[in-house]
Length: 363
Image (cartoon, rainbow, N blue to C red; front, top):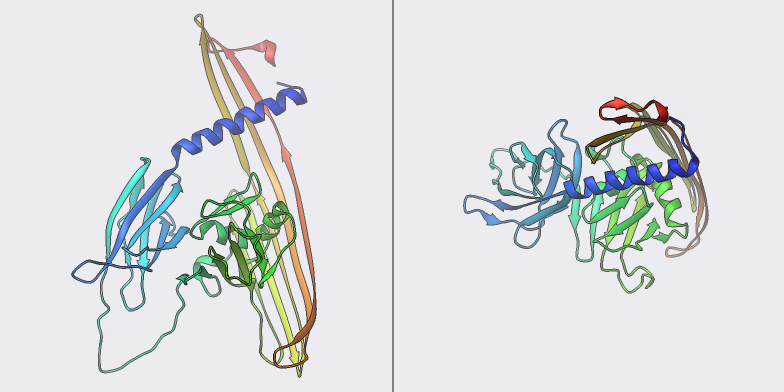
């Protein structure tokens, strides 16, 4: 069935409104408590991860509060596991849980003390995925297996307290909009929608850590009353010439590929550095809507479907030069290049049935 542009826009509005309403109704909250030892003492500042039961991929993460409590909000129905870890304690996981109701109590998860063997001592230093500081939450992205093959935007979506709205190109922190995005401690003046697009193409392989600052220090600009998100990129301080690169490929309703590269040359007081990341997402999506109306014994069934095949290519590049004038003074310049290319092919299919027989007049 062919439709006018106005009709198409109206149908798409109804389609997205219906999908949004259904998703809003389906979201669930998951809460529980993390304890330690045989006396089940509440454990604050423990890392808690919500994982998909199918492949153990990370959905959301956070740290426990003062009484060991945690809560994941706006979680879609499905099968999950909850894992928790803390330095000096054994990691623990809940059995597979099925989320169907609005509020789900995952109960208590106990972390037991590690057994100590006195014959030999091995010291291993490993940063946790989430670190709670006085004024900020730190997400340690570098060397995290859960971040492999991800983009900066996907890392933010999994971070505690961060909500990314891809439809509105908006990022909120602790329920507050107007978050200020910083790159290496410098505020980005790009529009929010451009920042979201840039982060969706930035490879996690170039990120050292992400700081979620909810209580900004006095030296930060007052404009960040909703908080700051500071993305710290990997910088190499070694002398000489060095660099690294990574390649990632995958397939899920379409192919996905990411690549990143960073380069550093330091000699004397001069430091030349550059990094580049590339991402290509070719994913198939399908929007569907069905409606049935019974009016005066006349049943009208409407089926609407719009398969879309978008292709998004993102490129990010930086090149900078620093000169260390004194021990506390550095002079430098930085050039940042960002390119986002999005195009897609879409079809629209609509069938109307009157009393379970197709309406030929609508064809």
